[in-house]
Image (cartoon, rainbow, N blue to C red; front, side, top):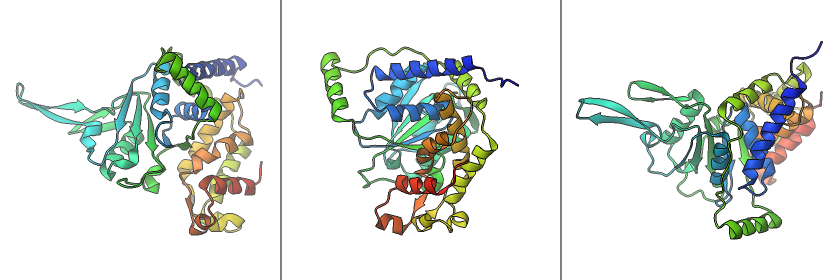
Length: 328
């Protein structure tokens, strides 16, 4: 019996994804892997924690993606003196009517760039994470739904720790993925210089090629991507291998203090389906799971002192875990 997922639907999805990439490429040079993972997370309905040094066009990337999707964009610079009201809004008194009314904060936008989230105190971080989880905020006695779609890209600067408030592991878990952005290659940086020299400012016009309705259609298409029971079991095996009760039999047991939560299983499941769609398939393969495992797990596993002593990164330990779990 034919599966209801038609070949034309896959082709249409790939054309939409290609169109968005082409629009982003008008401004952003290189970073193809980062752009793909960012798009995948938006389609999967998650949020991104992005780590990278300043000056790598993180703001420009999200602003460009928002323009390509025809949605609103707000950038919020997190600082130590920021208050939750500065983020979500507050009540103001109107003497004309002798009543308090809600004034909405900058979080009421489709795409939010939370710049340097680790510079804000815990109360502000919690307000943002609550909004991410509930897609609504409460101002006074009133609850206000946030715009749909709602997507948060939070950035962290890995080279500065003075005056910062590290996100606890439980809060890191709220982000579907953690992405890393690196310096451009010499050839890409040369292209950036030429673009700036020719245009002065890389802020050319971006066409809207994926409106919210089209995004929801893509999400429905992802729901039709098949996941075999063996693939689902493989996903659970990877997550279970990071946990204390199941990793004792493995050589990497001493490298991990804490493993991933069930949110990791859900994220791996969702992103594997999106990745299959990106590859033009209506079914998930083990390679799809492995391709998204690092961004899903790198902020969810806690490395032990032994791993740090051997100078292992989270990505290297995840690679060891993937190698130890049998393929279906």
